[in-house]
Length: 65
Length: 472
Image (cartoon, rainbow over all chains, first blue to last red; front, side):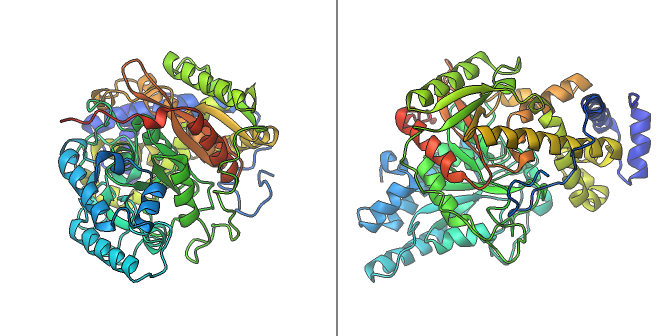
């Protein structure tokens, strides 16, 4: 994924109905790009078998499939 | 009541009250006096329930005099994070947005502590909506009792302060990604994140439903077990809580002999981990080996990514909960909270799905390790409490954002992502006198083994005896 610019982030926020400018815009842009960097790295892992259940049912013996 | 008595554990105080060596009114007055003296600086409390606590203490005295049945916390003053609803007492969630919110019912965990005879002393400070990263606290900047220029850890900041500085006999917090363990570590207290699905969340303002876990912050492992034994168990309003609950105090004094312990090297040996923290955790591992545990290193290579994975998922859940308010009253949030929530609201769905798969992979790695070991050992955090000013500096780059928001969280969030219990307890102090936290991660619903190991370590060391140098 390419680096997000402040203009792109502002447009995304507007589409989501969230006002965003000034120091908030600069920091949110840095935060989003940090996520893109780190989570983008997950693409190198083989996660095809990892079923994305959010939480384990309390009574499952182990629950991770 | 002297400072020595204020620093008693909740279990000890309950025993003294039952034996009529101390009265509930004396206990409440003693903690109120300490709050009056020190909380102006430390800012552990958002609301102090002075008159109500004294009224309840007088009622507790009458019950003692009449020989009424007594609960395990009879007359013991406790305090809870201001994320838990309290009937008739405002519950702010640390936000101006909820400054005047007064619930009509107690959260289940609060009701259970009160039914056990505990006396609610007040509501404790926290980062806004328990999210972490608050820049300006509407109810006062929480300060570390060991060094007031330092952070307390969050989000259960006031719970950590009040436990460490004896501003209550015991406290309750809520841990989504480390919010009990981090303040326990930085303030020098004991903090327990229970297994997800053991303690009801009813009446607790949510952060992320798939990881929120109410848990105690106390001055001893025994107290953590005591409070957990009271708050755990099924609740008709929380369908994810397990029906059968084992007594977490079972085997508490059995020692660490025969336990198998894996030391999580990707966290302990990370370049992010301070040398003093690493040395203290290695020393703790050696102590446990000396107590008869089998201790080995274990490599869990995905764990350093846990912080980012956690934030993508937990913050996404939080952003959904806050979205309408964020869109209409965004300027009433603290800037740090607002930026965190807006970021999560804008994350691409493909990245969030990658994070969801990564959570499953991290969970499998943790559960596989816990099939080999009774528990895992790691630092609770990479550093001791940092200066307050360092957390308030603007974020100038994506690298800075990753360092500040993801790296530290990779120490506590593996347990959150896996849904397993974790305990933080003091394992030393830096040369400058700041507490260091040892994290023990256990098997699902096996808090008893976790607490047994923690108790064995606590008994073998004297860290618990140290008290913070409160200002005169």
